[in-house]
Image 1 (cartoon, rainbow, N blue to C red):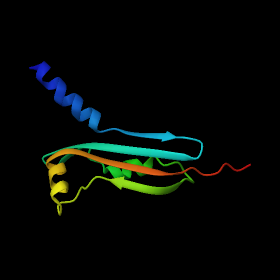
Image 2: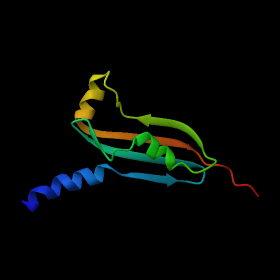
Image 3: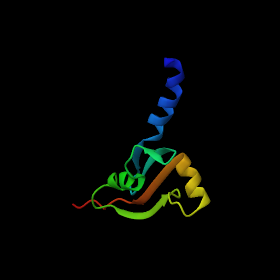
Image 4: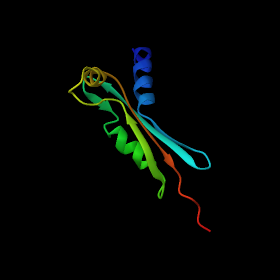
Length: 97
């Protein structure tokens, strides 16, 4: 019984991650959530989690999110089973001397 639960638990825990990567002048942050039958794991909005990783003083250039609404076919399908993803890109603040 325990072996049957390992794969589903691993998939759900891996899908609910977020991260941040930066170079000298630019950054990218991302967040993902696993959706199954309109239940999102973790429950927090992916866009809020990705924007929370943006450093103070940095500018946001682009935000890309997967459709998460119920007005499109793709939005409904990803809410039934799928992964919600948000990526935020921008420029870091210039260091002051």
